[in-house]
Length: 162
Image (cartoon, rainbow, N blue to C red; front, side, top):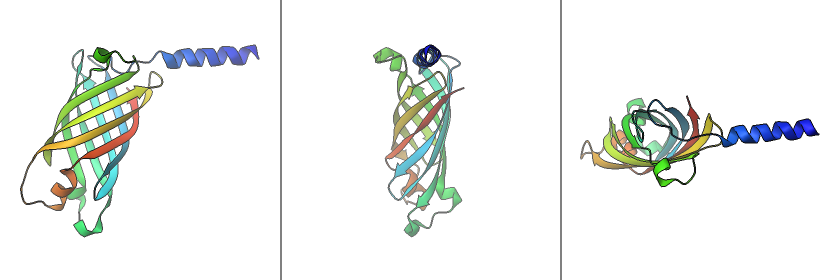
């Protein structure tokens, strides 16, 4: 019984010593589900810290379930974004395992903004949620791709420290 208590205590201690964003050189990979009107899909992102509270990265979305009325091909379902994050979890000082990050992104389909939050349960694993909003669209005549990617989206999933 003593051994089980010691093991549980060690595991609890190791899970309690995680940090959400540590600054320059910190690398995060996230994978999750994307929810939006007319479709849903998968989202992946990779961010690297370039300063105490700044990270740069890439994000990509591929829509799997698309409304059949849109007649969307591969190029319509796929989008990739370069992104900039201001990681301000440590500024807000809520919890060392929590990171809040507003940011901007430049994609193949639009220019937009996002707000995200992630919480780490251990030094390597956590969860995230992110909302994306287009600020400027690259066209006025909406093709299926522009209609799919120029709207409010919600991403939720798992986050990993690399």
